[in-house]
Length: 324
Image 1: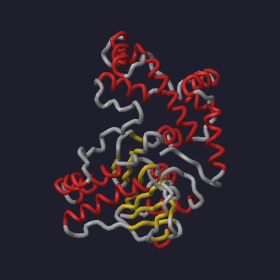
Image 2: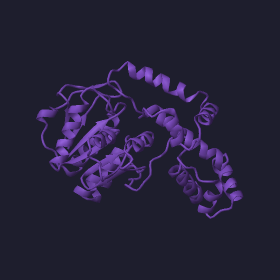
Image 3: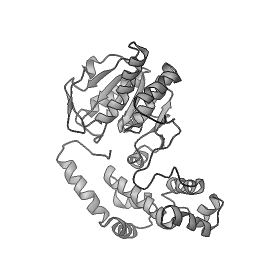
Image 4: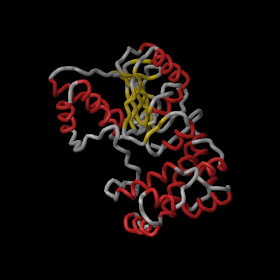
């Protein structure tokens, strides 16, 4: 396995990918897996936690690997990006298997290596990804394996992705033993959904509630009426309102507009889209109504949300920051 590291890559995501392989080797009593690290020029790479990591190879002398993963974290624009995209494109054209950890999916997509493939990315960055690459199927699952493309959503999902790789390579018994070594109580499958951040863990909530929230999330640009939401769940409007009141302590309408505003904030922070375009993409009929709703919910105007990010980005030439 090869890991191509770019500026501000996620150290945790890398460790969560490498250590399952190390543990699999230990469990087998032999070196089944080997891994190398790559940077643009072979020089150490700064991780998102501020630590520098030495690497084994530069792009020009990197060996062929069974799977090469691009590891990207807080930045998807970096000075050496053209060379990185060219390398990924070249390797893909040669038929090599490619993968992405955390925001690596964004870079892999820019290199044209996710066209026609299913992928995933961290939930916080999925709205921006879908706006930038509308023709690529980007799921909310913890990881995706689609033919020769391997993507994970970051954090502990790297463990799940590599446990699945180990299961396919060596068998379920070894994969379960590796999971046990990490106290990884439940091995998640590709079909498991990402946890959606504060207040969004609905796994223990009633199925009807989860179904309605998922329908809301799929229809942010053109919101569905409460009547149609209730009908989709097989409930009356009154029953739906009681369900939301009991489990999330707000009305369906308030919950829906909260989802739309959170999507808008993600787009403000992660894309260069105009404020009007973001308003329309999140179901607001006018920029003034969007601004009023945004300020009521977040305590600042959309333009004020974007200003500190633009100022921060200007301190790093050629770099654009995303969440994660």
